[in-house]
Figure (cartoon, rainbow, N blue to C red):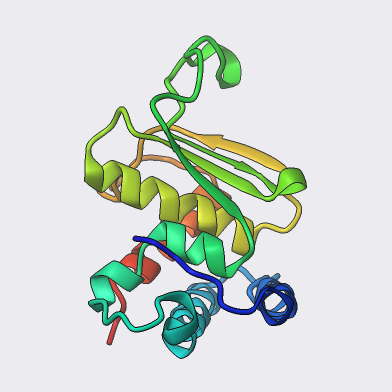
Length: 170
């Protein structure tokens, strides 16, 4: 999807405002749903600015790279995200997604299936939107199907955000 910014001055102010309104401190399901809904609304309300003279389907508009663009983030799809030699408590895995708040970047590895790429990208957007205290974060491959697994609260929140963003209630 090619995004086009028509007016950079207006966009800069608009992106700053959007990023400010997307950060929520309360981590309950309703506030996470509202965060995803506000991002949907920003995308919908600004579709002419994002895609002049084009009509996209909601599925095309609700892509992690579009959400990142709305938030003023650099979104990169890369062949891989480095060595699997790092992990918590000796656990080793290939990173599927990275979020670096200090340089406003999300990177997602393309070495996984498309459903994992989309969910991981939306999950990383969720970390950016919901977890203001996280400066850098990296994740295992995610497709949203992990049920019953013990995951830290912030991971479950980012998972829920990704699900709400990718599959809206209405």
